[in-house]
Length: 100
Ligand code: HEM
Image (cartoon, rainbow, N blue to C red; front, side):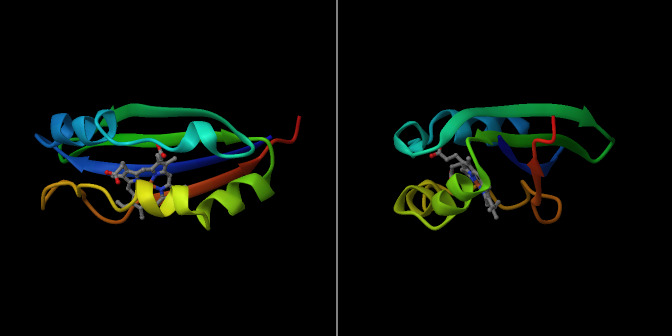
């Protein structure tokens, strides 16, 4: 099992718009070989931002890497962009290999 998580710091007041973007996106994941699950997670808040994570589970590292180079990945990321001011900083990608 392999896990890929992209963390986003979303400026206060922009949460609803960010969630809407994800809710209304065209998703291609269900057709991708080796894909298992997707969640959009809402985390802790500070005075400046609310933390979100897009969380995906894959059968293997190879399945994840193949997806990042696929047409499905490109199309998912060519959709409507979040309004200016939504993101505080860059998304933070974290990758995990299951040990146990
Ligand atoms: C290798 C790095 C990345 C991973 C693993 C990743 C993960 C994902 C996943 C799993 C989806 C859903 C795709 C679907 O349902 O078909 C998605 C869509 C999306 N990703 Fe990424 N992503 C990456 C890079 C980025 C970057 C750099 C941004 C910049 C902010 C971003 C922002 C978004 C947004 C806003 C969506 C929702 C659909 C849209 O409007 O484009 N992602 N991403």
